[in-house]
Length: 141
Image 1 (cartoon, one colour):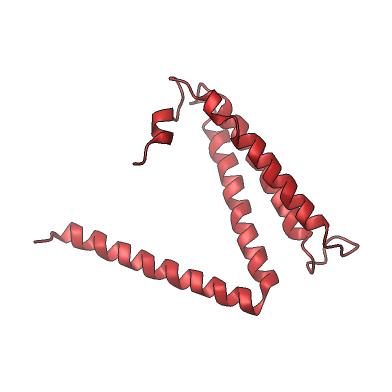
Image 2: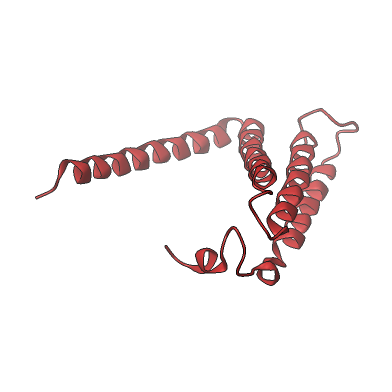
């Protein structure tokens, strides 16, 4: 027999799955109707995530002995800035002149390159005194 908390948890999971599915389907329809709007919304979402990573790292800097989290946060600040420029330089946005389609991919590649440089050395910065232990990052739970 299920308890009320188990049933509530199961209903919440189903509700979350339905809302996520409808949201994904809505974005699919939006991409078919107006790709520029779809691309802008998805890029803005990734920019918000990048700036949130920076905000988290900046506000938790006094709690961490290892400065890699601060380095990662600062890197994501610049990654978010490059992604913002990529979004504004996308062909059809009309922000940058001339309306060249080559600026946007170059900025996207630069952001991904910076992201790979920032995320690449993380195993070398793990230590026992970290605010995020390595065993937590490597565990599946």
